[in-house]
Image: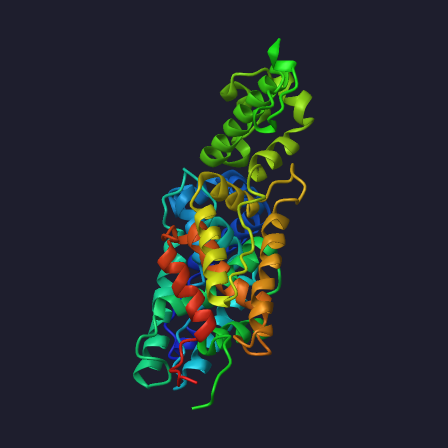
Length: 204
Length: 204
């Protein structure tokens, strides 16, 4: 049982086999849940269907997650908490392009799309803890605009929330409604429009 | 039977009773369909449920609309074709504020919200004729921006589609995701951001 012996190198600290197996099972169930949510929507992601797809017993799923609701929320947000860091490059345009490129990238993944689609789906069996995922992250993004105002890069009256919505809204809408691509070039054009506007400019 | 006698005043031309009754039935069925779509989504708007709510026979619905699909599309777009005219006031800001205020107003109605929500819902029983409702109307809106470029109000390189998305995207997103209000003041702030940008401006 070398597995239980403490290891001086923390990166190599072995995980007890039971916990390791538990983590493998957790990952398999979450992956199956994301897959079912993506392909069949909320209605298709029953505990029975997820357990079957992951090759585990339904009772194991209930033992770990307690309810279908917890499983779905875990599947949707697992790993996404670190997906949208707020950059601080010292320039407002760079900050915004980086942040919204990361958002567009997230919206290009199966998990990000599933989370967004399900956030706008009505489902009486779930509490409304889905919408806050986006609003919390976009609220945090306002800090980039605020710093731009403090540095004098943006007008004193610039509205952080409005600017964030003017870039994120078109990204969400493309994913949800038109299916048009949300690549890095599109993100830059949206950021530049929100920063500079469409009117002719005299250089200061 | 004075109803069938021609009348010299076209505004007072009487409608034959049968057609009048048919039109009343059509309106009752469409209203019931909009109501069910709004409260219960696509899944709830079956022909049987709509017919029951409208107090008509299911066979009458099939006789008139042929299929559930036609009924739903008719319910969603009935009366909306004239809801979003493209104004031409001679000034790009006024044009944009008028158009997007009308869009926000439409999105504040039960029918507009139902159409938008259902446009982003996946449903294999319907052809995808829902998305085009929005894209056709937003494509037409690009003409307002184009005229602004021609008048020199906007930069020569201004992208009409991008500007339309930068205002409509946040409106759609508020309705679909956050539920935040889309009043006239919000529309004006979005239009002004897209026209002027958030950077400090030197007046020309």
